[in-house]
Amino acid sequence: MTKLIEAEIQAALAATPEWSEVSGAIQRTYDFKDFAQAMRFVNKVAEYAERAQHHPDILVRYNKVTISVSTHDAGGITAKDFALAKAVDAMPR
Image 1 (cartoon, rainbow, N blue to C red):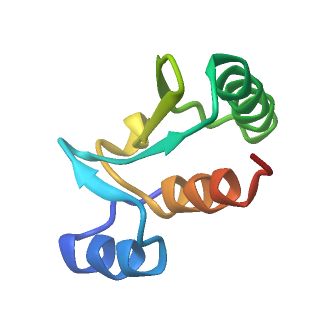
Image 2 (cartoon, helix red, strand yellow; image 1 turned 180 degrees about the horizontal axis):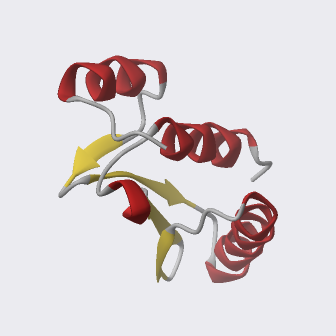
Image 3 (cartoon, rainbow, N blue to C red; image 1 turned 45 degrees about the horizontal axis):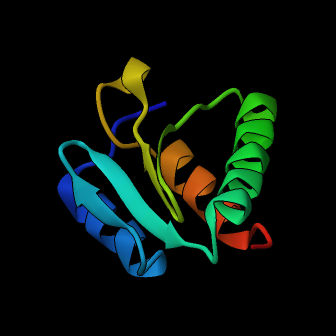
């Protein structure tokens, strides 16, 4: 997987408007009704990540879940990261 250049990252971010670039990764925070709902979402993300063999960093703060992803092998953000972002956005909450 090839690391995207900044112009490609910005174009991909335009197609995933809730995501932003933070410290060499793309990131989004999701809000939920409560902790239990947040954890159900985290489990869905984990199941998808295992199947895709692409694992994001996940931070849980009660009813907020922050997903951060980059492709470590490529040393930055790749198309694979944006594919994961779109898949996570499509998951039922």
